[in-house]
Length: 245
Ligand SMILES: [Zn+2]
Image (cartoon, rainbow, N blue to C red):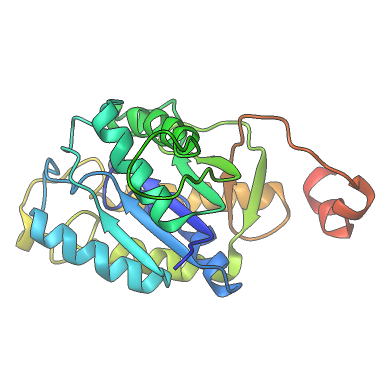
């Protein structure tokens, strides 16, 4: 099955925390969406690999994904190597996405930064047919970045107001990772991401981006290259009024 948008995260919960609202929205619009986690998240302080795999699958159902997979790149060692590039290229060629989502390269967690470069390079090299994986060469039209810890001046913001509730549900599918009353089941140790404040911060960020375009909740994205526009009069319709004035 051809996937329209394939979102890559370094760890099983990265997409849910960042661009899940957009993934859910695109699915609701009829596009085929998929998520690839480069690692199984085995270095996570709480939960086990098995628990995280179940959570990953549950979150995928909530997001309405057409495909989802965890690769076997070691957590904590997402390097830009030929071996890892080929693993990503195989997924891109298999699903032939039009758009690829990758983490923004300025990050706190080194895996996210490496994932950013790895996915960008793989998306390019996937288009070269002499790189032989036994599959047809395919280059996505665009690599689009989503923010992890640190932000950027957005190239555009997607209105996710109608899908925000479902995004929160997808995040909460990771019962072992984020705040929930049963936390003792997964270990007592509170982590940076298991506090109630962490989830609140995500909500606040989505609200802030929403406010930039005059809606309740938004998700921001970055494209590295200038964007081509053929008809700015058609493109900038009345819905832009709230965002820029
Ligand atoms: Zn991560």
